[in-house]
Image (tube, rainbow, N blue to C red):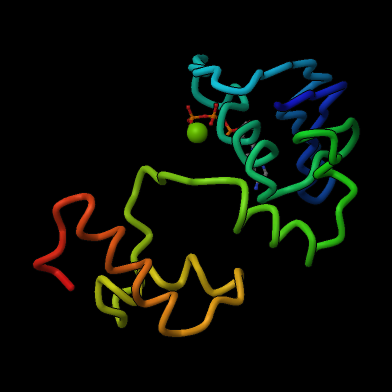
Length: 135
Ligand SMILES: Nc1ncnc2c1ncn2[C@@H]1O[C@H](COP(=O)(O)OP(=O)(O)OP(=O)(O)O)[C@@H](O)[C@H]1O
Ligand SMILES: [Mg+2]
């Protein structure tokens, strides 16, 4: 469950400050499905970056199951992203020098799995979405 309180994000460029999020309070329960809708530049991507632990708010708290992502040290945040958060990006974000299996495996590297386990899980994941022939 997510609990956001007073989430504010300001981007500063030289003397300009853009307030992308201004005091967002939001609760997202387990199993909830949420659509974020709004005009371009309205802060949707910024909010997703806060939820995903990809960036930190300027002020406020982003609690995921009671842990404030805004305050977590980078190494712990990396662990949360690896273990608790899934991302489906609009663009593929594939690494062109890696093959399909290696691309999937990169997401498992922060989990510290043995190479053989990593390989097996990546292969299973690809097969499960009908991409077994790409292995
Ligand atoms: N890295 C950045 N540096 C400076 N300003 C930024 C940065 N990222 C976003 N902004 C600004 O913050 C505001 C919110 O942007 P954001 O990308 O979150 O909007 P959005 O709702 O996702 O828009 P879109 O519908 O176009 O994807 C905009 O004014 C944008 O220009
Ligand atoms: Mg966006």
